[in-house]
Amino acid sequence: MALSNTYDTTNSGSAVSNRESLSDVLSILAPEETPILSSLNKKKASATFEEWTVDSLSTPVTTGVAEGADVTSFTDKFSGRARLGNYVQKFRRDFMVSDLQEAVESVGPARVAQAEAKAIRELKRDIEATLCSNNDRSVEDGAGSVYQLRGLGDWLDSAGPSDVPADYRTPAGSIQTDASASFSETDFNDKITSIYKETGSTNSLTLFADTTLRRTISD
Image 1 (cartoon, rainbow, N blue to C red):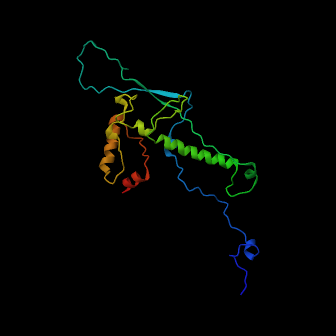
Image 2 (image 1 turned 60 degrees about the vertical axis):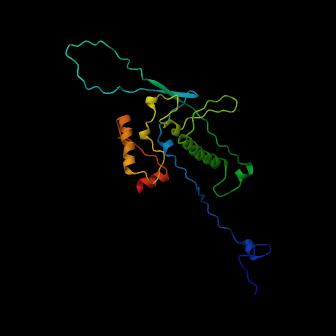
Image 3 (image 1 turned 180 degrees about the vertical axis):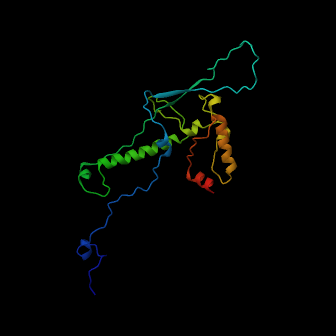
């Protein structure tokens, strides 16, 4: 028995005139939150190598001073001052849209403005990943090496980097190298205690954690 149907899609037949149903909503199926980048203070870099100074306080003294005693020795209050720095790093995401694609109607759409917006979102993820990386800094030399910033994974190293004085390196007690099932509440509190001993404050701590660590803490 002959009948019109939806599955005969070759000419000629009823199905060739059926309309498509394509949503105008385009879904991005990729994580794009950048919590560390979003939380950092921003400033304009004025050189390829940005530097800052750090200093520390001496160990507290609890002994008294005799009445009328003269000062016979003096201390250099700035002997522990150090200079740290990091190189700037360029990030780039290229895109191109043809003149015809710019002119036609499409879901999304797929024009220069949308390509630029997508590239910006990708750049934010690139920067976030670089900030969280173990990359060491490097300087551009014109022979293949490019400017690269040092990631937090390299800064947070109790044994280095070599240009960071030992007094200003992150203590091993403040570092958790994994988020295994053996990581307990006691371990977590030990890290906070170590941070407090170094900074004297735990009033404004923010935890940036991947899904594994979040699940471990929640459990």
